[in-house]
Length: 466
Image (cartoon, rainbow, N blue to C red; front, side):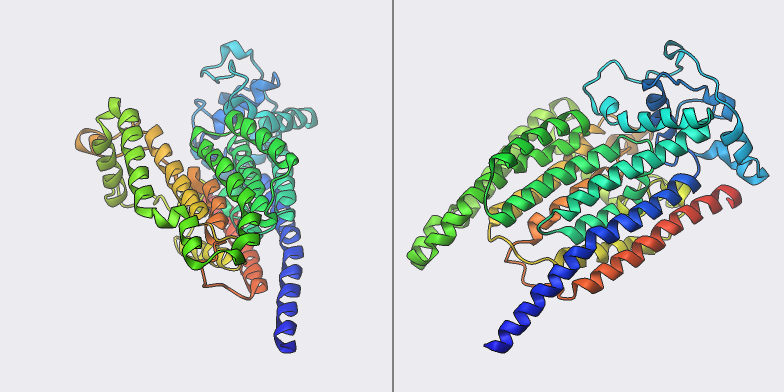
């Protein structure tokens, strides 16, 4: 008995020590790696980079003529910078050449700034502040973008630091996803996706802490409401589905203590009767399928119907209609924020997949709710489906390929949904656990450092040599 208590105490001490380390290691790697990405990466390091810069600069009255820097239009990509890298004139061209400003009414592209209550506007507020700071340090496009990157990176990294610090479980998974090259590059850019990431992180963290503490406080309800509003205003629509879990988590949390206190009073038969979900699981499943068919049929009525949309989704995942040499989708989930330019090794997909799995399995079990695990899984699936639904009308391919695929979806849109996984894997039904959390922490740190260094090095190497 004493030996068992000793091992139990030792396990708790190891867990406590690891918990104290995670947020500190995250912040150290996030800031140092973020500074490297912010300063060394080519300009417009995120997809639609020219657009994000145009919106952010316009918000503070610094509409910049990017054609002066060799950019023909407000589009996307880093192709226009290659000649300046190869000639060694990048600093002179982008950092020392002063910007030419023009009125916003003369913008060659609609920037969508009329709606102040949208993710396009709210998500660009932090980069806009950085643009303003950079311009007043030195009025060049390169200085504006680099300072804005650093400002955004510090702002969002600190938010994630405090979220991870106060998490009751799931710390390693949150740190792992946040240190991935996709999120590190997002934080060190002018993209509105950074706000979506921290908003989802805050929402999931609140749910996690309610489950761990087994109670819902008034402050939790108020914070839930604020995060709901921020989500609807500052996140892309596919991330709104995370809010579905708020009432489910609240109800499950509210009945948890009662179930624990009364557990000894129930016989086995009464327990089974009390668990409605288990007893009527097939009824619940049929009900969910019926809801999916009805709602799906309504939403896809003008897109050919539910069957055609599902067929297109299956074809999209089972056959590649564009050239094999094009970058794959999965590399865009965690490894490569802009695959066309990053040239990241595909083996990193497997490494990051393993890292996510062991990070999930290193946590303790905090609940027995099958409803919570299934509901969370369905929300993740719904978030993916909602993204593909939004791209049903988009496409550049022709003929059969256009009719049978869903084009334009990037897997980085799903990266914030990975933060929901601790709610699934913290179920006591998952018996397999990784005991040595310190080893997982070291694995995470090494993988993050190497991957983010490769992101910068490979991108720059590609700009010069490819």
